[in-house]
Image (cartoon, rainbow, N blue to C red; front, side):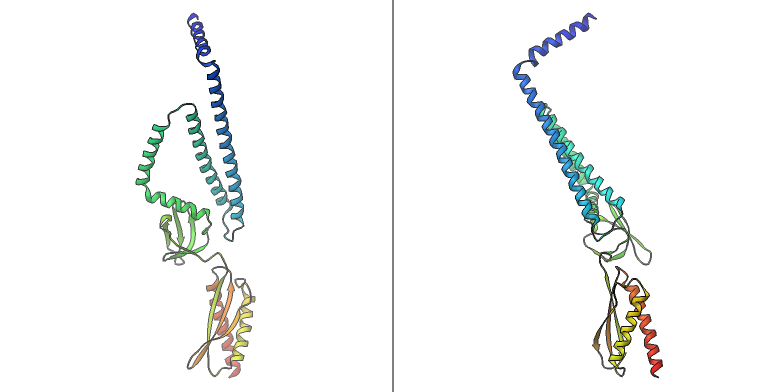
Length: 279
């Protein structure tokens, strides 16, 4: 018990002699003030970042590309965590610097470690960074029909490292995000179906145009894939024995092929009926 009493007595004497000096107290006060300012500044930075992220996610929801809400929340959480970890790390390092901790060896060791990891996983880092920007910039979404180089199909999965697309014949292509240089998205806006109808020279052009307009109107009533009534533009090509009349139809994204086939079928039926009636 006497030993403990003596220990605390010596400690209090040392504090009075070395810590309780006015200049020491002033130094400790300013160090404490700087630490508080650094901490508050870090909190403000994180709050501003959260506000910015919320605004960007709201703009993302208004984008013509529609994504799963859970994916949007995941992206927001990912960005928040990344910013929070970075700001907090900088805050801790600045506070350690204020209390006299030597950060030189720590920063040097972290730099060497980061350099080694960067050289060993360059392609992985490239894939992850590219995948992040693909998701963040809404370049394409799950369910979209896209083309990457020679691969065309429906997006089945967008990952941080790879993207999976399924072609119409059933093959699944797994493409590292770092290899994606250019993407064509067919699902963002309405598509256009183009049909050229060949008719013989002896057939009356006005009569043929009338028949095609009636057929186009009928196709518009048959399917919801056609956004508005197809247009008969007129004669596109004049050949030696026949001529071609062009029809265009604005369709929902990626539905132009179905509409083209339907137009061909209905036009063939209608032209056959007209020829039978005229015979």
